[in-house]
Amino acid sequence: MLIEDTYTNIGGLTQEKAPATMNVSDRGDLWVGGLTQEEVSNTNVGLKDKFENRPNINLEKFLRSTEEYSTNFFLDENAINEKRMRFLKEKVTPQLLSFIKEEDFEFGQKSESIMLVEKQLHINAIATKNWFNQLYLNYFRTDRKILLSLLRIVEYLDKELLFPTGQTMAISALVHSNDEVKELGVRILENWCSVESYEILKNIKVDTRWLQQYINQVILDLEKELCLI
Image (cartoon, rainbow, N blue to C red; front, side, top):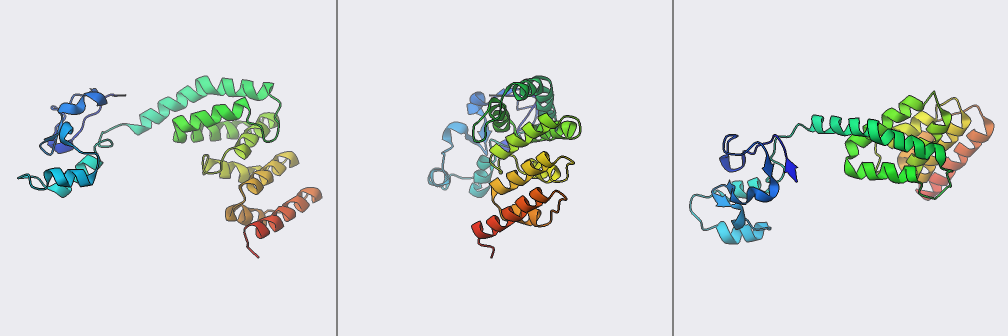
């Protein structure tokens, strides 16, 4: 893995002593608190056994520096996420929309669109959530078919994988003008079966009779399932 435009201050190394572009696998000659990486054990117990009797070593400081060893690089995380967002918008969005337009959604089946979003979440969750939320906002009023497909993706995914974006999308679906979109928002909250879902649905009132009856039934089911009564 190549880390570009970074430097480390581990063990007192200055920017001049640490190259701007460093291959992680080539860091064996870096000194950490006066010790080479080769001497560093994988466990704190091993470290204590090796170094507690060595002179001029602050063991507590050394252990803390080794724990931070893999994260003590100065990276522009905003730039990384922005670059990923551009990739998602330019490359992934057309592919996702193509899948949505071509596939026939079957309840309980993992479609290509679901697998695509799931894969992107595992690569970069923060950028993918922002990208997916922007897609949802773009099509909230303009294309009901795409909107429903995006909500079906949310319904299939684990609620923690898309948190909190998925929760926000489900709640906003409940105030959409279309009853089918509202129903899917209810289904998402029902599927997640959480106290949060219960509290949200308790505060939702709709004009469509059959939909309100559905919401009332889901509330009763959640009360039983979650032992809230």
